[in-house]
Each structure stands twice: as structure tokens, then as C-alpha cells.
Length: 278
Image 1 (tube, rainbow, N blue to C red):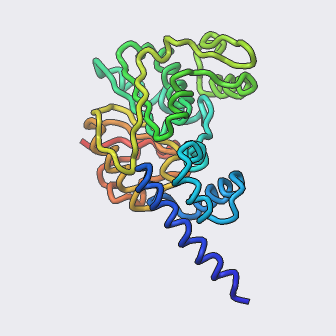
Image 2: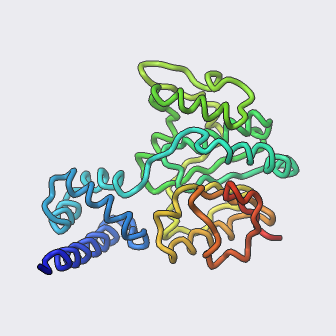
Image 3: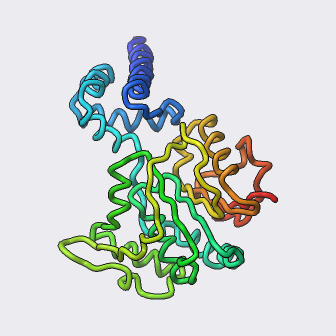
């Protein structure tokens, strides 16, 4: 009796030391991530690397840079799909695009872009709405491997049926097959879709504003942050957006409890799309 709480307390200490070690050694800061989520992913990593304790994992992380590169894939969520949540993209197409057309040039920031599915979806949508030529897309993430995949624009062919259906449900104006070539089990998307895209390393934890943009999409990222880090990220978005700019969040995310809630109005409440106040 009593050993389970002690073990959990010890694990919490080990995890805090591990995260502190990662900051000191590699300058990646996960200390502001929601603890329940980070514990779940570290548990998966500990088992994957066949470590008995988090202290053992810490020892290997500090002495094996290649292991840390692999660990980063556990600590950063890499789950997305083209036109994920089609209703969100219908809202952009039907309700945001008329506003975006009024700008002579546009900048769009996809924060936490992972392997680029969200940015690719927006590039296709903007092409179909004839906004692509006036738009510059920024895709940022802290995982260099994810950024490489985003720049390559190559996805497993077995995901294409889902992507195609999402695109159709999102009001796609042509066949998705017009945008990729199938080869060797992969779908290689047209390079021209990325000719106006810039992919770069950027941390919502530690980096500052880098551009003034009209639209920010940061979906399903804030749910992994604690309240303090959520406020920091939303503060960055507020500073980055132009007057009356738009912010799109994930379906389970909200500005309701944010320190910056007064800076935004609901624009499409059901799709968690907000507009910065003037």
C-alpha cells in the first residue's frame, strides 16, 4: 500500500528533470506542454527505446543526439490529413475568401504545420479561388523531419481516398487527382503548389513574431499546451495578425479562457474561426 503514489511522484520528478535536460542540451522547451499529454507520449517513447525509467531515457537522450531526433517525433504530434474537418474549409471558402479578396497581397501562416497537409489544403483552395498568385504561405514547426516532409509534398497513396473525399466535402472545384502524380506507392503533389510556400523552424514556446499576416491556421496544437503557453501562443497570433485578420483553431480549442479573448470576435463560431478586432 502506498507504493503507487510514491512511484508516480518519482516519475513526475524524473519527467521534469528529463524536460529540463532537453532544454539545456537541445534548446527545445516542452515544460509548458500539458502534463497529461506529455506523460502519455514520453511513456510511449520510454517503452519504444526500451528504457526502464525516465531517468534512463534522460541519460540516453543527453548522450545520444540521434536518439533525441527520434524522440522529437514522439513529443510533437504529427497527425493530420488534407482538408481535415471539411466544414472548416467550406467556411474559409465561403465566408473568409470574400474578405481576403479585398487585399492586394496576402500572407498566411500555418503554425505547427507538421508534414504540411494543412498548408497543402490551403494552397489548393486558394488556387481554386484564384487567390494563390497574391498569397505567400508560411509553414512552421519545431520538428525538422516534419518540415522536410512538408517541403517534399509526398504522402502515402493509401491516404489519397480520404484526402479526395475530404476535398470533395470541402467544396473542391476540381478533382484532387489534378494536383498529384501517383508513383511507387506515393502521391507526389505538384511542386507549383509550394512555389509560394516558405517552411521554417519556429517555436511557439520561445520565438517571436516574424511576419504580419491576414490568416493564421493553428489547429489541434493548443490542446497540447498548458494555459500559460496557450496564452503566449495566442498573444503571438494577436501580434502577427493584421487588423481584422483571421485565426482558425481546432474543433476542441477555444479562446474563451484566453488572456487575449477581448482582442477577438467570433467569426464562424462552429468552426472556431475568430477575427481580430480593429
